[in-house]
Image 1 (cartoon, helix red, strand yellow):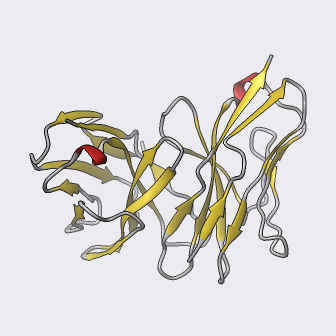
Image 2: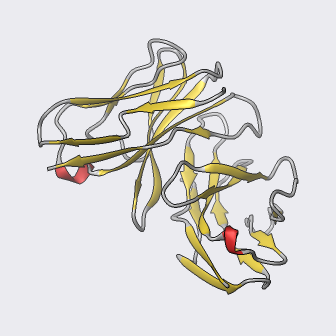
Length: 109
Length: 113
């Protein structure tokens, strides 16, 4: 069975401090991994996907297959980054999707 | 505008009264799915569909039904709602391509009394 673990329910950082939101996964095949952001119980919006190795709003995430991790990082937190962040894993052929329980990021001014 | 549209946004009903939450997408996506979001539990997949007439259970399918008669629509049906189905529901769709993300609707907040 596939599993996504986000160990921190709440992460509080000061504005300008570095941010790392952790995501570990368990899956026997080749995963597709994504980060989504949700502001104030609105719709989830795509933030990053492992396949594109892009940087969005200053966030980056690298897939580490050895450690089965896909941590989200940003060097300098901004107040507008305060939101819920979800890590998601898409399985292969059967297209099941598993989300972590989410981490609430709180950026303190 | 490319979007996933859910209706209604808010719904209050009573135990046992059948209801349907509609979901429609205009992006010609093959894949559609439903999730419920509960505090402390994140999003859990209810059902998904990889194409017309192809549906499968997610992690929490009990008490729900779906159908996929047309590519653009994927309604969620609660035949006999119960209070434990009070939740925030999201519909999402995506292309069946590697790396293609899910596009989410605005959500439906359901309260069953």
